[in-house]
Amino acid sequence: MGSLVSLREVTDADVEIFYEHQRDPAAVEMAAFPARDKQAHMQHWAKIRTDATTVNRTIQYGDEVAGNIGSWIQDDKRLLGYWIGRDYWGRGIATSALAQFVDLLAERPLYAYVAKANVGSIRVLEKCDFEVQSEAAAEDGVVELLMKLHK
Image (cartoon, rainbow, N blue to C red; front, side, top):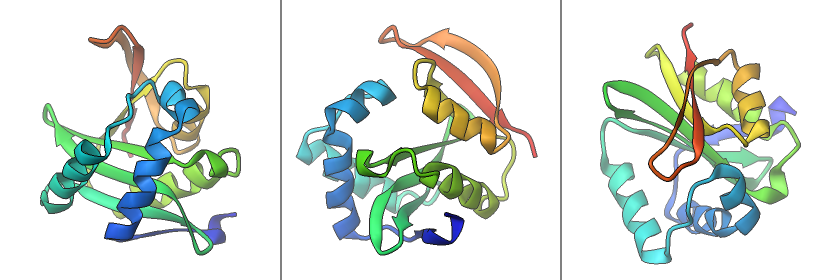
């Protein structure tokens, strides 16, 4: 599996695919994160691609764009997040991509917020040695876990 999964720089064509991924109703429900309209999505990606404090990569599965992974600084924490297109769920792609991505980032600790109901994503983070630090309801009422990678 790992050899089929790779990370590379994000291209404009990738951002179009990411837009479709984040519109999927099942993915939106799983992530507990609302989809953006096209203009907001494009503006968001334009902003983060020019921000020197972010690190963003396209997740490839063979020759296909399976999703994206990124890291940014918020509240003095280096956070990360990822989004995998539903067609690629259940194949170990997120775990492989996250393992590669944390190797790419030298900074520690790393943090990730994840909806408590998103058992699959929690498992991906745990497989990559993230541990639950806290649990709290977000402003929208979604219960989130803050997970941390020390090493």
